[in-house]
Amino acid sequence: MLLKGKTALIAGAGRNNGKAIALAFAREGADLILVSKKLGDELNQVARECEASGAKTLAVLADVGNHQEVNRVVQAGLGEFGKVDVLVSVAAIRPHKNFWEFSDEEWLQVFAVNLHSTFYLARALAPSMMKRKTGSIIALGGLASLTSEAIGSAVVASKHGLYGLIKSLALELGPYGIRANLLAPSNIENQRLNPEWYENRTGDAVMNKRGGDPSSSPLGRNGTPQEVANAALFLASDQSSYVTGDRILCAGGKFM
Image (cartoon, rainbow, N blue to C red; front, side, top):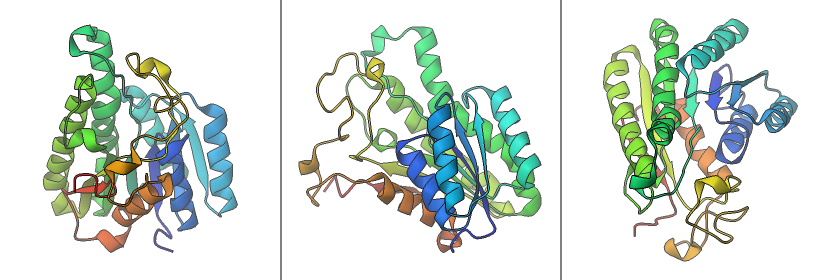
């Protein structure tokens, strides 16, 4: 088992990529702190499925864009398990609108969830990781961390900032044996259940369907959450012990 004896905190574990990562980590021996903002029933179901694989779990509802709630989650997790070896920051929101249409509050909310949450989580966990001289921090950035798109300014800006944060964490925490990496999935078969994020878009690409055009990949298909989880598992495990400050694409060769 690649994660036997390790504890992982997964923020955004209620569905899609976060759920797949939680289940994959459980199968590989990790105990889990599972966090979601409001998906209580779904989060509890994920916890039950992880426990069926033998994992000990702690499911917590919290807004990781709020530093006080992050501190509460981390304290609860450390109190329950005594340590956290792996942080996976999945939580994100993706409103699509013209940049001039964003209110100040909407703009700041995107940055709170997509960028600040990883900072808050890493800051809260760093002291215990530094003391133990081990840890892996993984943030999901998507292709918005690499490229751009129309009516996505807040998402693109926050995800570009996220990669910058990850590189800085890798530099500062490397001397303590802690690694930090960004995972960038694209065209993954995730559910899109937030129509309010897509005010200028309609059709199957928005609601309950796949997240991209399969023809944009030389593989001729979309990816699956399990394939994202496999990449996260690599970054979480000792198999990636010499990988830090990096960005790994899980995009089916989209840019080829």
